[in-house]
Image 1 (tube, rainbow, N blue to C red):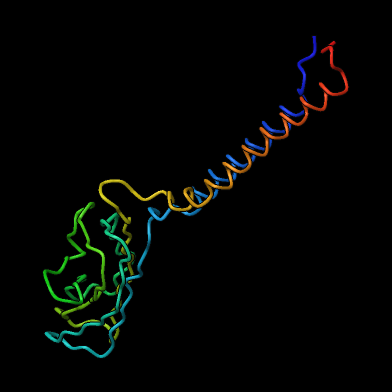
Image 2 (tube, one colour; image 1 turned 135 degrees about the vertical axis):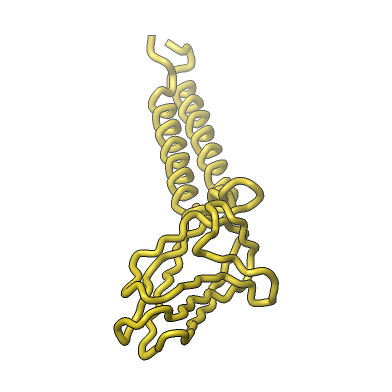
Length: 183
């Protein structure tokens, strides 16, 4: 016994599955809880023993975040005491990035990233540091996962489901019109 409208059911099922897959992929691709990275690179030339210098950059953290990693990739030569701070532009306590623990909370807003050095021993004419600050955006206690996009695609998914159901009903009516006994 063959189920009436099985071709329509198959078409509707494939359509709904494709839309669901599209929504899932689009939601994952738009996830804003992904790690973001800020380079921490500075080079200082011509400093003598006891002299200090600093460089500053503006950094914007669009959503509440937490420190994932602070990695100093290179310090050359080792003749100075380095500092790296992230300070709210509007004022407030700074985060010492060289000692910051994973999970240190960062509020949303504008910051000043500062890298400084104090020369402790005679060495070469140039000293440099290269590193990277990585943070993960947070909303509440969970990373954002693109749910805004999912809500935007929900009407498309519902419309596709309604279209699939309409196709099934139309197929059944057409079959009943051509074969009134259901044989």
